Length: 290
Image (cartoon, rainbow, N blue to C red; front, side, top):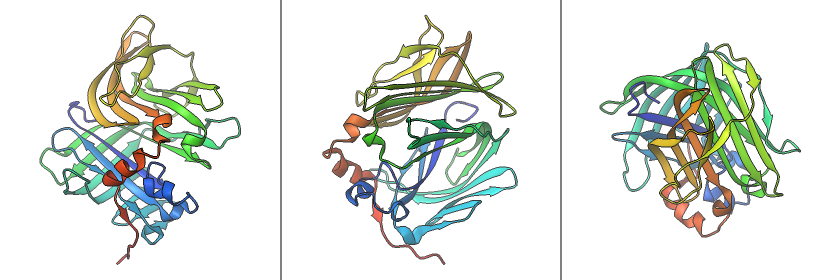
């Protein structure tokens, strides 16, 4: 999120694009044949890009991920993201530029999301600065950033019905919450605080705070001090099964604004949703690197 609070960006690299209808329709047999660097910009002139690409578009080393015209790479202690993507309907246009993520530290924390470890969350850099330079007026800015990852060996909807996640900057570093309802009825509830040096600490779970449902009526909640309220201050991404937004909550008496996500996997499981997604997620099977 920008320091001025008016713009934000998210970039997700997928090997096995979990929200792609094309990957689902393929039977999820070959994740390398459904790769994507999803770029979404929020604020004036914001765009959404999510192109499902075939295996020929993937090149990968220990320090670099290339997917067609876009790439992520480690350069010294920075994560450098070069983007060159086309946004999807209804606002089709090219998004090109570079984003740098400058972590204050890299953690070694892993959180299994299921008992058998089929799903893992890795908050690599819970506190970072971000520098954005995209070729649009007003899209050169700096702000608050983070870098995390999820890994899995099964589809999300095979193990979960709902989850919500939030990451909030604090004076000491950052606090993350992960809450999920598994299909077997069990619950995941985890809270971590991170200092600027990347040291992680389990913390007592603050109270659950209900929030207004999203435009598509996705249920939302986050955590914060008992007796306080949490509210959306910027809408980012609103889909029939998913909500991403900037949310203000209160932790230990301190107001903080961070990124919040809510995911309704019961809805995502519906086959009726996949043709709708295909409009927003085009499939480009072939790619040749120059």
